[in-house]
Image 1 (cartoon, rainbow, N blue to C red):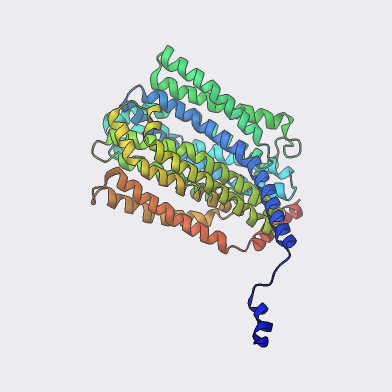
Image 2: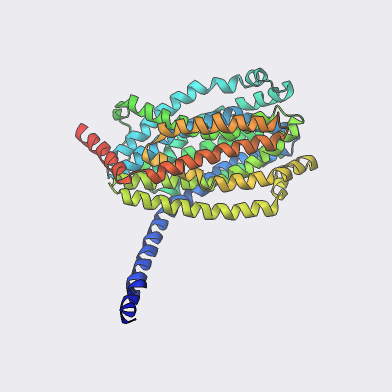
Length: 482
């Protein structure tokens, strides 16, 4: 018995001083708070900027939607098939700057940020010029893939007026990433907010007072996008970035092929994501009662796209934070930034998931007064809610890939999960199984879920200390070449 009593304390957990546990908890909370502040310095302005820029097109869509169902469908097709596809590619190419500028800033190689910006401008403007014919021959392309003649004609007319936006994006996307990598996010937020305010007023005048219709709405958006470009360009070249902008330099043409390869890999990676749900609108155009289905789906995608500006803000912030930490040689810091970013984004996603389920189709009243379209939006609201929840994770993981320079690997993942799983599954559910637009969307959600699981696995299994060494070697190689 004495022997049992002597052994008994050993069977219990050994008490630990409260001070140690409390101290560890305080340190963990302090570290989380510090990282959250760094994250939100980027996330807050990035979200505001993206909502404002997206709001420019939403305002145009809202004005056009009240002109008629055909006009709304034409704008949705034009913005999806050509502008959306090309924007996705340019957006992806510009994301190469998040890797390069983020790591250079973390390594304190500030001069290289300006050089990378100029290289990105050259590359994106060249690709933008090469993609311009897709706007000019929009009507022919739509007729070729079987869209109705009336819808194709109107969408074709509208697409030509989107060309100024196309080149504005080629200038703006590198500027935004250049500024974000240096934590000058308030510049991007202010310029986008000012442009949105101007856009609302100008669109109202052109559409309602001067009766320019859809052309007036699109032309107002063109002007607003170039206002954002002008504001950020003047700030950068006018002395707002003295450490990173040293003027135009011939260094922009050095290592040009390597930059094109990384930009192209980034372009393929992100445009495959960007095109994926835009393809959903295109496939819906082949269903019965396609005009109503496209209208309802485009409204859902607009709501989803507007909310997606929040995860996209986390994508940008995660890319910058991961790149900064890797450039500074801190694998542990990069890993911790990922945990904080994903956790915060998921919590916000849960809030919006609840809001969509509660308000259902009421948000759609902003875009249409058609009872038939509103009823279709009501039927799709559950899919919209789950898409928003899933997208609270997926873009953040893409931000990890951008910050780490994994664009080429993730491009292969996107091809497999989106286009070999999601699209075929959606087509089977939509047509042979007769689930219509809901079936197509459900199948594509399945592809996104598989892609998210793969990216999560790659992130968890990654040796972040080794990634930090690779980033440090890249910066050292540049220093030696100087």
